[in-house]
Image 1 (cartoon, rainbow, N blue to C red):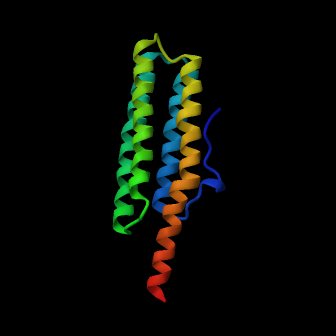
Image 2 (cartoon, rainbow, N blue to C red):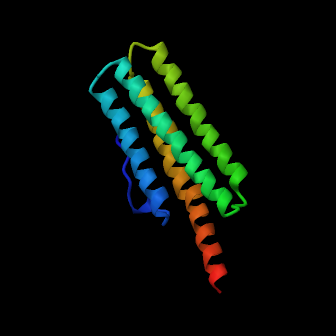
Length: 140
C-alpha cells in the first residue's frame, strides 16, 4: 500500500506540508523499488535518499519549533529520533537480506508510513496550531 497525502495531513504550514508531500513521495519511491524487485542496491539507495530527506525535514521542523519557542520541542525531537532509529534498522534489514522482502515492506508500512501519519496528525499539527495561536496573539 502506498502512502498518500490527503487533507487529514494538512498542518496549515505551507513549507512543512510541502516537505511532508516530498517525504511521502520518497516513501513511495522506496516501495516502488521493492515492488519492482529492482534489487538490494536500488532499495538501499532509495532508503538512503529517504533517510537524507527525513533528516533535512526534521532539522527544518526543529528550527521552526525553536524559532516559535514551542514548549513540546523535546518530545518532538524524541519522536524524530525514533524514526531515524527505525530507518537505520530498516537499512540493516536490507543489508542482511538478498533484497527487499515482504517483511521489509510490512515494516516500512508499519514503522514509517503509519508512524508518519500519526506524527503529522498529532505532533506536527500541534506545532502549526501553536504557531498560529502565537501569531494571532501578537496581533491583538
